Length: 255
Image (tube, rainbow, N blue to C red; front, side, top):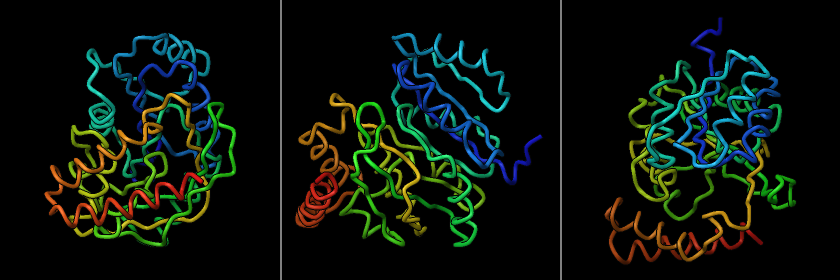
């Protein structure tokens, strides 16, 4: 049986991801670090996702993988929070249903976390096309990130994060029900005084289909602006300051 002190609970919110989910699960099962559990939280998908997942799980018979079926669609934040409640491991990782991990992602990131004695770590990643083929566009990460630094950049990618729940309460890891809930969560954690440490090695591929939400640049600007003003209660000048540098870095990251 897996030791809870070494167990990594991997939480994947799944919604209408039938064409991607098997490849994503395979990237977890290929990990060189084997002490993990995979919690798939289906957010009441409307496509064939559930049947794809159930057929896959029946074929591989891997007891480390669990499926939670939600009866209503509430969004990725609620799905991840449901997964956090079900997690048995000390360490919590997030993975999106269409992204991929490198085989040594968990092994290297966990070793980095222990070396830094950190509560919150994240890694570099590469943009992939709709088939998750690397495009050569790599997002490098800083050695560390504080709340003030994080306000003007969105360098932390959800699929790369790892938390030590003995050092961060699970309630702090849970995501608020707002747009850009992932960014809001990082800020919430960092605002509590925790520093996030970046491991500058590409250990994940961020699949970007042409129709993905994050490809809508104007909507992304609206979401980040609302976080500044509504959630963080930043002043108008300080919000404008952070938005400017956020936009510059976001643009450079995609060139």
